[in-house]
Image (cartoon, rainbow, N blue to C red; front, side, top):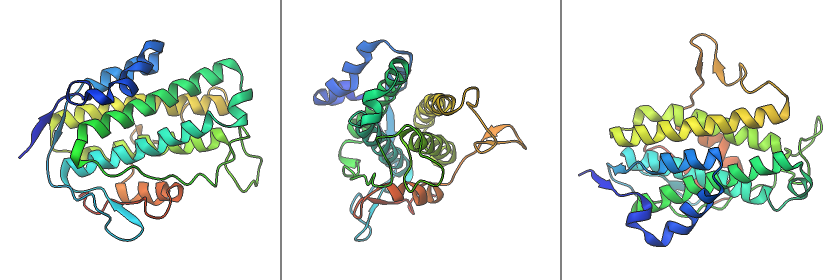
Length: 245
């Protein structure tokens, strides 16, 4: 039976510092994240968070499976921005760009910690990222480079996240969960637009992320999303989303 889950600040006091401390920055992004986090989750369906194979983590089924899928992607994004802030590109970035990267970092941590706390015993394990294909010392990779630069990778992660939320919405059955996903994807789309504008001014959107036939952002099915996301996860942390349908 579905049951409402209180916001993490109430149900899990130990999670309060990472969820709410960053909001003191009063940035637009973090304020928007706090608003999204105020919505309660409703868990529906069973979840088996055991590995479905030696190299994969099964996110589960029903609404719980979709929320674990979102939690997994937020883990990956939060881990990426954590590494960005350790790298030499970030250390030498211009002040405004560094401030925005800080905001994106805090925001993804808020999302990650919110899903973890709200899913509670239904949450999948902490995933181990593999960022060996990213060069955290450069802003953008040179043409033909073997590794992605920081903004190349940020664009890939943010665009993938938006497409993932867009594609997974139809699998949610609880209205509150769909509302939550809609709030978060709107913020993720702002992330994506900013990163694109950092790369090239006034290119916040493009035909690669908008379907010109209907003017809507492109959506991706979970299987297509994890085919890309799994490239940035270690063996034993790769995702199995076969239960989302």
